[in-house]
Image (cartoon, rainbow, N blue to C red):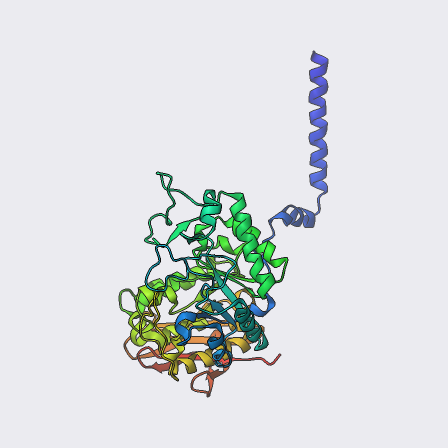
Length: 472
């Protein structure tokens, strides 16, 4: 027994001596680098965005209210105008047939889907839709359609053919999504593999058969992320798609969605514009965007959309005299700016959601503002989306409680945004030595030379967007 113990101890000593010898023989380079290779940073976003989305803008189309006819064909007449305004992605609200059982209003909600493979006759036929898709593509734009995966209409044929695909109340009955007043729909159960397959095949159908370019997915966060990740991979196997989630979450960007909503930016702009809160929360949003959000995740920025317009007031009641300042902010911060139907025409009413309520079209200053901002976004790489754009860098000024100022730069392109987010005039001085050089005023269309501590006079809610473009 003693001899075995002795041999065991000797073997340990020899092993230790060998380790010491190896350690002593290590070169400084090996010791410094080799152990850390597995700690190299990796990008959080693993999907590949469509190339055409890198500097894109987006527009939400409410077909029912867009024209008196409310059809695909009637909407086609607006395509050249939208192209000229600088729109790249057209997002159509749901185009499938609407349920009749428990319908709200005279025409019902687009988000109560009766048939995932059908076309709402209110808008036209499948051929009409394909014609619209072709026209959009001919103009160099792209089209995504709204997709409602979380729930269906009460009279969707799946209710009778596959009742097991739906969630049930404690009493065993079909139910709307719990805690919401969505009485015209019932909720799916995503624990059912067969239901997941059906929904994925339906998503693939529209890409294959109509050549759409992706989806905006309703209440995407209510649905397990692994479903969306599987669906995204299936769709990308057909063609590169663009996916927008109606949600605000980092997790959705990893393998499923190109873009999520920036609800929090809207809220903080709204609170600042209406005097409910100071600029502090808005500055905090921008700080968090830089430090915590995935570098190649797209954020959709907006002053209006169908939910805000229908249930929370108009662009004017929500932002008042600060509307244009908010529009400029949404178009120059990190993100992809959205325009909702009629905003560019000065839409000043909440459009009816369940009944006919056509938009009144007119030439308006909002459209001129968008056109200038979007032309700059297309050209100036500092404003491009995700990792293609420049990081927001805070520019300090002496009126931090009134003025938001920040700088972005990418591949020699530069942009400095200065916005008086208050109802008082201000004389503001910026610490610009780091950003000195020659710039062009986007709206004044004049040259400005920045040196060190540059001062500007701004009216209430006034703004400056200064840029420098390096010819590529």
